[in-house]
Image 1 (cartoon, rainbow, N blue to C red):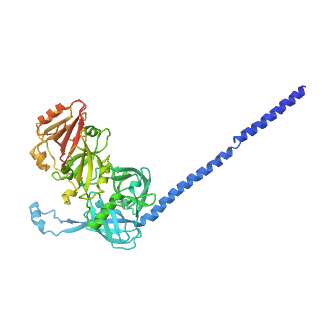
Image 2: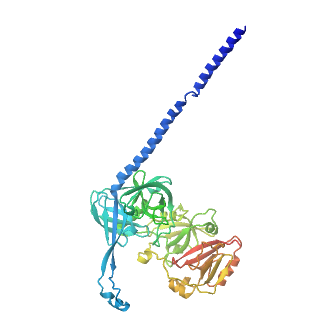
Image 3: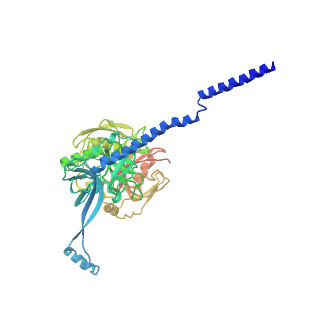
Length: 509
């Protein structure tokens, strides 16, 4: 009997063990090696993906680089030989008799060929004021180039070499590019000819960049990239993963002057418009509203009566007496929210809409004016073509403010009447000569980083009411009318820029 129980118990153990093997094998517990084999297809797919990306970059370099050129721009600088042994009086007397000694001063940039017969796009700042332009190709062919036309407002220039059947780039669509997509920059940085760097689109529609010698009517609508861009890259192409040019590399943001990962390219859609005008007319026929504009701050949005922080603030009119927008009824302090039937949120978007029109065209503009929505039909004008209007000067002499000051704690500023000496030195227009010069700004007041000492002149208020500021008491009376948390809107003339701006301050006290 005992033997039978033992046999039954042993049989049960065998059945249990066998069942365990079947159970474990059904869940692959005994097949550890298979997990590694199953990962292999994923690893192979990843390797193939990386290999395909690498091949794409190789294809871009092979396809685009032959159409990229190195540009040497030379300027003849007249240097008069001097003799240190001469006295100053003799030096002045002999100045007109010295023989000029032209010495070439050269700079290098990049460009890319857009037509087989030799039209090349580059930056305006690469060829500006050049007396001689030389183009070198990847295969070391060299050409003398002539400047067909250049446009300081977009920093685009078109040059031409005499050639035939030259390699060309394919122009793409920058509007289709999305932030995060791969891009490649090709150019001649730091004398390293035909360098290829890669990165991504970091941002689109960048504006309000503090670029040197910024033209008064400058259009800023940049593509930002972290592809390495350095001096010498200017004018070269920014290319998408399909090998199509979507921008012209133009500027970098850096404290050292070399790549810090913040490069900016002019959208090719804008460059194409400029190129066609330069080819056809030798200049750009640009339509303008005739306004100076800035992005909207939270205080600006509140002052305008907007529930969102968006739009474009009108700071001034250009020219002041004959602006198309001013003639249509637009006022300083208005916030543009729509143009040409399209919603506009930022400066770059408004500029993008307006550049689709020609001078003389009519465009519908919608603005918010202190809580009231208004519509205008503006007949677009054309910017002045004089050199003074092309590039605004930012320099002025050292200006010493006069005394007789008064402080406003609610704003956080100290002001003094603008003196005739300062007004004359800065060539201030007559209508702005009776304002109040800001002489100090408290870091604890609402004006901090909005108004600037010895640069800004308060000339008018728009809110709580429209009034010219002729004395310190004028401003003091108006400040008293503003309740805690309300907006004080000021029209301010900046001495360095030579133009006005609108500053909206929320008074918290």
